[in-house]
Length: 459
Picture 1 (tube, rainbow, N blue to C red):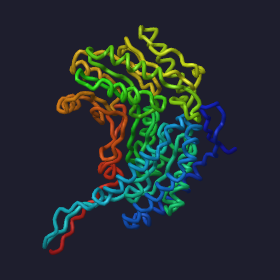
Picture 2 (picture 1 turned 90 degrees about the vertical axis):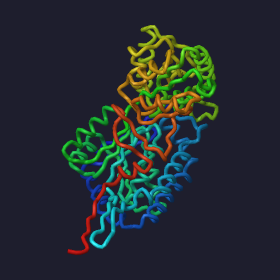
Picture 3 (picture 1 turned 135 degrees about the vertical axis):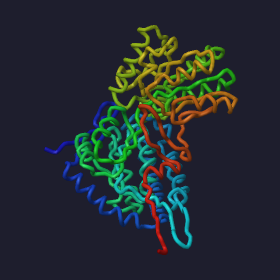
Picture 4 (picture 1 turned 30 degrees about the vertical axis):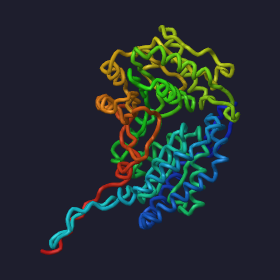
C-alpha cells in the first residue's frame, strides 16, 4: 500500500494537501540521477549556473500571489505580511554577487618550479531538509549557493509546508535548471534515515528540532558525510539602561510574536535593566493587546494560528506551568482563542529560569521578561541556556555592545535590532542550536571541499 504525507491546515484542521511518499528504491533512483547529473552541472560555467539559479528565484517570485494564501493555509501566517520573497530574493542575489570571489582558487605560488593552489570543489549531491516556519527562505539559504557551487540538490520539505518544495522545483525547472540537478522528494523519516545511513548524500543541511538533528547525526555516523544543523533556540534580548525604550519594545515584541512566535531566531526571553523594567512591560503589554488573532486569510488579522494544534498545546502548557509557579500573565484571553491552534499571545513577568518557559524552546507567541541590575547579571542569564543562535542587545554604546557580545554564547550578536538574517554574515549557532554555517563566504566554503594542487614543472 502506498504511504502518503498530509498537510493539515491550522485554519480549520482540514487536509489541505496530500502526496504519495517515495519508496526507498524510488528515492535511490532519484538520487542516482542527481549523482549522474552532477558532473555535467559542475562543468557549466559559474556565471551560467548563477544565471539559471537567479532565473529560478525570479520564477518563484512570479508565483507569489499564489504562494501567500497557500502559506496561510499550510502554516497559518497572515496574508497581510505578503510571504517570503523579499528575503528569498535578497539572500539569493547576495550569494550570486559573492560567488566568483568565494569560490575562486587560492593561489599560493606560480614560479619556475611549482604551481601551488587550492580549489573549491562541490561536494556532489547535497540534501536539504527544510522546516515549515519560513519554508522558502530557510530552503534557499542552502539551495541557491549549493547549486551555484556546482552541487546537485535533493530537497525534502516539512510535511506542514508540503507544497513548497514542489513549487520551488517547478519554478527552477521552468527557468532552465535541469530536473535531475534540483529535485524535490517526498520521503518518510525512516526512508530519509535509511538513505543517510546508506551514504546516499555527500552533504546534508538540516533545519529543525534538536531531536531530529540528533537522529540525522546518528544516521550519518560512520559515513563521514558532512552534516550542518540549525536546531532549537531560546534567543534573548537585553535592554540596557541607555536604550531607546520605544524602539526596543517595538522590535523585541515583534520579534517575539511575529509568525505566532514560530521563528528560528525569534526572541523568547527578555532581560531589562531595572530602571526601565516597568515602562518596558507596560508598553509591551499595550502592543500585544492591540493584536488581532484570527483567520490568516483575513487581511485584518495580525496574528494567525500556530501551525499545528500540538505546537499550541506545548506553549499553553509552558504558560500554565509558569503561572502555577508564580508568573504573572498580562494578556487576557483573546476572543479568537479556540483552545486549539488559535492561541492568545502572552507576556509573562515574575518569571525565573526554573520555569520551562524561560529554559526550553517555546516556538510560540509567549515571552518572559525579567529585570536585571547590570551587564554581569544579564550575561549570566543569557548564557544560562542549552541553545545559542542569536542575542539582541539594546544600547547606544557600540563598544559596550561588542564587549557584552564577546561574552555571550551565541552565533550572532545584534545591536538595536533582532530577528534578521543578513546574508553577508554567517548564519550559525552553538551548543544545542547546532553547528555549521550558512550564507556569506563561509556558506560557500561549507558547501564545497578544498582540493590542493602541487604541480612541479621541472625535475
